Image 1 (tube, rainbow over the protein chains, first blue to last red):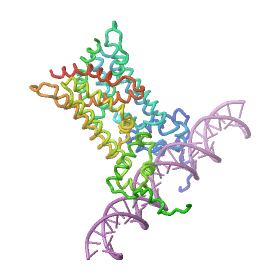
Image 2: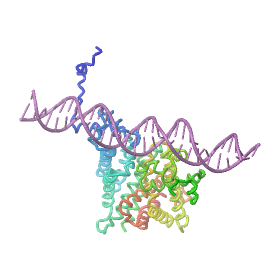
Image 3: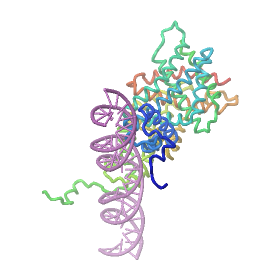
Length: 212
Length: 212
DNA sequence: AGAGTGAACTTACTCCCAGTAAGTTACTCG
DNA sequence: CGAGTAACTTACTGGGAGTAAGTTCACTCT
């Protein structure tokens, strides 16, 4: 009864050891959840390890550093976000609708994945070290999507000023990120549709102007 | 000769004790410089204290925490930046020029104060705690300046959708911040004038559209 | 001048957390 | 079964944020 026989545990055959890929996934899931709840600074590696039921050095063996683990979370979440927006854009009927749908998809996704959004906001934590560069590359995919959309909207017969396109794409990326932050502080108040409509109105005619 | 007579020091009467206001200024200056060079994470409170020639607890007595000290730097730098942009806007001849001049002033200031800019970028480090809220209030001044400009450009005889104005102001603030970050990574490549011109073209007609 | 008072300042810690060295346990394949 | 390797742990170091408790200076007020 009081003995600590290992056999007693066999009723629940907890797999102590798992292969690397599975553990990495467990760690990533736990990290995503905890980073999302407590933020980068507020999360300790011990905490994540404990949540997985594993010791800290194992986490270091698989992800190298706290930044590395955080970056892995960030990449995965950004990829999901990019997918959501891409799908919306590709499913649209015309360029104007593509832009609007993309904005709606962006704000809606962030609404529906608040913890994901917290992680993305904390991206700024990686302002130093090699992780910072990697984080920028992750964001660059997004800017490139926007740039592509902008290019499609411009006439094919004109020489396109690629630098201007980059400026516009970076601007839109920055605007949507700030709007998302503002919105969460504001109690989620303007709806995704209202935000998308306003952005649409603000930008559409300006994109026209860039043609000449 | 080899004696450590205190009298020998009297040739350079180093004021060991200074009054609080003076010390706070010294600390703020040192913190601004070091935070600007090494970033928030890379800076230790001991380092700042040593730069001032003082012990760490004194810094804590005056600024409360690392976040508090960083926030003090941030506020001062943001205020300078706001002044620079305000001056440019107020000195303009018409609304269109005000907008353009404001953008140029923004990018030029950041060019000329790279350490200040580093600190502002690191603002994201304060994503948790009471300092985060304070940091947002500091930024809000900027958004309000933009909102005022937008209002001035709208016709006085129409009911103004205040929510739309906030959206636009937040967008512009986000766009200019991201452009500034991108620009430093890009080797400072598009000139302030080119950035301002492109933003001007992109936004001007859109602001018109918001009237109806 | 000398005692009293408060502000400026220091020494010497605690605690927490990222990261690591070195070893141990369990699974697999001959 | 034994050898090899991948999964995993215990037990530590180092460094930096924050603090408790005391010390020294400068300035009043008799």
